[in-house]
Image (cartoon, rainbow, N blue to C red; front, side, top):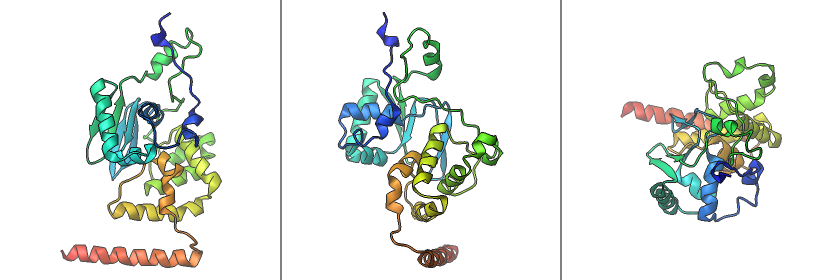
Length: 251
């Protein structure tokens, strides 16, 4: 029997467990982790630093900083590792000022998996999930009745992106957003988002949605802020922003 057509079924939850996230990662763990991070929903898009990036199935959109934080490495080690994988023919990497795009050359397209399902019942792509294709032609408020049940999750997505959007999240993104809402309600997330977008305006790098709600949000937490303190902070930030615009206009 041709074992090249076999697959190993790995529970997706493993990759989000504390056990898997123990640092530092080995090189083998880091390579397998790329399959977890890869886009599994066909062509999709995400926004980073004000630029829309398109990902094909089997591609990872990330940055050296994010991978360094996730794997417990430094950025130079991450880049050397990715370059070595590229030379060995495992990946095709592109590095630029927007981020890092990694194409997994061992990724098996979803259609191929479906085509072999009858012959290999246990076949499953590592880290693969069943997603609905993104539809960017309609507003997120024109979803069907089932999708309207995710109203708060969709509003949280808009808070994260900082604007209304026609981007339709995948099932996994909705799961991430709804999980975040189980820990904090929509109103409680607003201070995090305000601080996050201030960080972006000040030149910080945009975060990937799944990483933001898993762990990155903590760096944008404002401890012990009551309603009045928050209102005062917002007024100060608005004043500071107006002052920056005045200075920029004079230059």
